[in-house]
Image 1: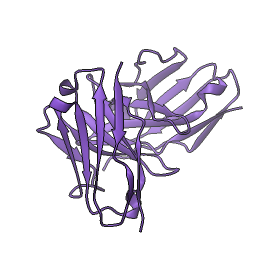
Image 2 (image 1 turned 90 degrees about the vertical axis):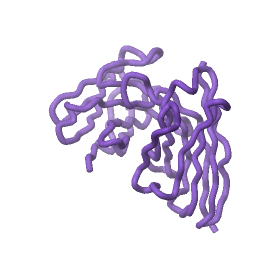
Image 3 (image 1 turned 120 degrees about the horizontal axis):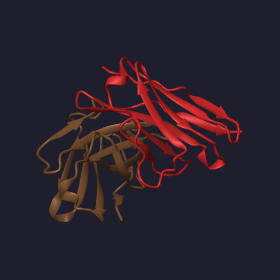
Image 4 (image 1 turned 30 degrees about the horizontal axis):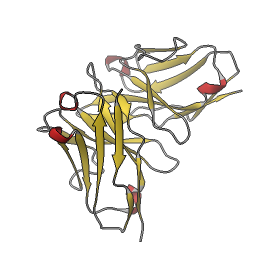
Length: 106
Length: 119
């Protein structure tokens, strides 16, 4: 069965660029979606179909997907961006989430 | 504004049953596919089940197939998850989520309802 992998944690200095990866076999051939989740809250969609931002999501959030890696990029990271980030794909009638990456803004 | 509100969570003994519900508002419920996702304490997200907009098609994760049943009542704008043969490892916050129209992603989520399976 298909698997997607994420780093457990990523740290970024305030105002710098954070990159969170999502790995999978030929994941570039799939649509990858990204969510963030703050403690005690429900997940929120931040990127869909690799590169698209839902309304209300800042332009600082962007996505890319090629080869075996999809990437969520957060520019000018702010303290409020601290959260868990999950990637997600659909494969063989199954929705798969990555294990999640905890983003720390230093 | 889209609203999804789960209810029905609580404490249940191992081997027991529980039905959680999700009340939808702010959109044409009958036009959207829906899903259930859960999150065990301190863990990541686990997709459980999908149901088509008409309710005629559904998919399940292997961990719950044969024990959980997803259903919907479009006249009542409601989504359900019937959970049988519950196990301690089913303890989690259960979220309902709406599927986006362009692809298989979840564009709106409820706030979740906690299910605890314990003697």
